[in-house]
Length: 113
Image 1 (cartoon, rainbow, N blue to C red):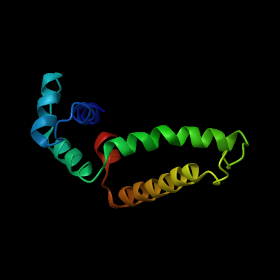
Image 2 (cartoon, one colour):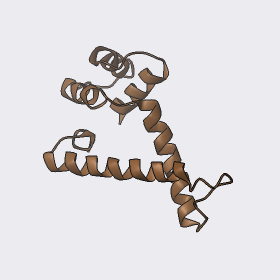
Image 3 (cartoon, rainbow, N blue to C red):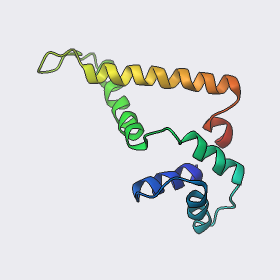
């Protein structure tokens, strides 16, 4: 988990997420760094917009709570809850990606247990 935290710290401070920077953050925190895990993390985050992923993760529980509460999917503008639909579609796509990664033995889950 500390590897992911290191990437989040770098993202928050506007630093590039690369092997050297992740290693430096982990060493500063006193972590015994495994370079293979650092390389895998950097590769996994290469095409990821972390801010978008955080926003999506934050929106997913809100969308799920509204659906579970039985509220209508339409909002004041009557647009049919496009944001909730987009969040659900993205969540479904992420689940497919996770299944693909699990099938191939790759992914962050394999690295971090």
